[in-house]
Every structure is written in C-alpha cells, then in structure tokens.
Length: 392
Image: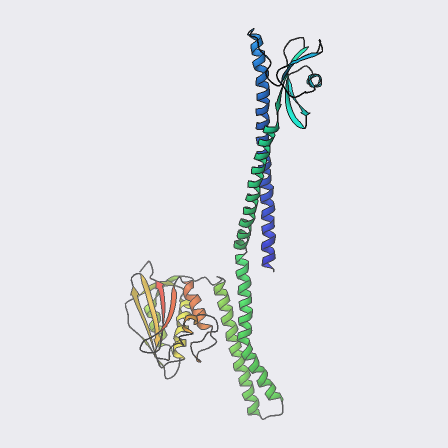
C-alpha cells in the first residue's frame, strides 16, 4: 500500500471538492456584484429622465441634460443636450416597443447603457439618456478579479489543509504498516539464531553415521533451539497485541505488596536470593496476570545477572512505587537509555531482549510508568509507578 500516493489522491480529491464549492460561491458572488453594478448604472440613467419628466410636469423649463435626447417619431426629429456621442436613437426607440426600458449600444468602441422613456400617451415622443458603462464595467472587473484571487487562495489553502488532513487520517494506516514491518523484522531477528542452530545441528548429525549419544545431543540442541524460537515468537505476538491495543487489562483491586512477596517466594535460580521488603498494604487497580508477568520479567532479568535481588513497594502520595534492585554489574551507560527497546540487552546475560519491552508495554497498559537506572552502590534498579486504587 503506497501511503504517499493515497495521500496525494486524497489531497487532489479534497482540492477538487473545495474548488467546486468555492467556485460556486465565487460565481454567485461575482454574479450578484455585477447585477448590483448594472442596477446602479440603470438607476443613474433612469434618474436623468425622471428629473426631466418632473420638470415638465411642474411646467418648469428644463434643458436636456448631457447625453440626453428627445426623439419625436411623428416629426422624425431629435433634440439633445450637450453630448459627444451619436447613439442610434430611432433604433433604440423602435426596439423598446413603445415601453420604458433599457438597451445597450456601442459608439467609438465604448459601450453605453440607454434608458428609453415615452413621455406622452401618443407614444410618439421619447426621452433617451445614455450612461457610459466603462467605469461600471471596470468596477465589475475589479470585483471579479478580487473575488477570483481570493477564491484561488482559498482553494490553495484548502489543498494544503487537505494534504495535512490526509496525513492525519492516514496516520493509523501508517502506524499499522510500521508495526507490520517491525513485527516482520523482529521475527526475522528472533528466528535467525534458532534456525541457524537447528540447521547446523541437523547438518552435523547427517554428515555421517554416529552413535546414539551423538544423535541425542543433536536432537537436544534442535529441541532447545526450537523452544527458544517458540518463546521468541510468543513474546513477539504478545508485544504486537499490546502495541495494537488488543490486550486490554481487566482491572480489579490488587495488593501490590502481596504480589511482591509472592514473586520473592517463587523459585527463579539456584544461588540467587530474592527478597521482598515488608511494606504497608498498597492497593492498585490492575490485571493480575498481566501485572504479575511484567514484574516477574523484571525480577528474572535481575536474577540473570546478580546474586541478590530486592523487591520493595511503597506509597508516594497517591502513587504506588515498586522497585526491583540487584547487586549485579548494572547496565552499560550507553545502553541505559535504550533498555526498553526491542532486542536491547544491558549486558551479555538475559534472554531475547524482548522481556523489558513487553514489561514496559504491560505497565503502560495499566496507565503506569517504568524507569531503569544504575545504583550508586552497584547494580541496577527498575522502578514501576502505578496509581493507587480509588477504593483504597
């Protein structure tokens, strides 16, 4: 799945939809503005004729204003005010059909708006006024240009917003692909060594005939490698489910201090003392199997590199803090910031390098935090912090 191509397609689709919407709104705005400008020109032309008619009704001598004509169809003559243009007056009057109305004509390359108004019931005499549309057309063009510039900018911004939104919407898919790639890479990493051991042991056993003990040793090596591969795959699947949110803790009140004592009493390795420090009752809301597995992983990790491990639990405000400390060599300072990453080991001991990563995911699934550090007196300490139960 090419997420970049999908993001580009979503961006184009968003931009096209935005262009349709913004374009429609812009067209409507330009149309309305042009109509208002046209109406303004019509009102100007009409007002000139109205003033002349009002003057005639009041028996006041009224000279014809500039660019205004009186047309007598019966006498076949015209009279005009001051003007520099020659409109087709009789054509305009004939086209009006004897009714008041507007028409356009062109003179010397310029467009004019004419208003024709009959002034007598006989329908023989008309008044015609003309308004130069150059200024009005310039205003309409200016408004159209501004509107389309704003529309183009809006579409560009919408495309950029679509690109950002497409990236956000594809983030879960990107994360799923990342987890898939990580799982494949981790599985290859985890299975490489066991498969190499199995192949080498089987090849060694098949090179020539051997006695029963030699075959038994080869089969034991193969079984051990297969078990290691099975454990590694199981850990990978568990980690994948945790990171995908498929393992949801079933929370219930749990005595963290008793869990520490329970783990201290378990048998981990000969010659290693695991001690639990007595503490006050600490109740947290937790999934017992998951939290026990997480803390047991921390204890096993300490047992693998030390001779004395201490599990201590205490309360700090409304938090329950559990520490697992040991007297081992501690973690390499260069590795310390990365010990919770996959396949990171603090030393040459330990297991696959997935245990601490799984423990971290399990603790975080409970809403807690986990941290690791080296002790000044030697050894390492891992700290798990959880919220105390509201019912405590």
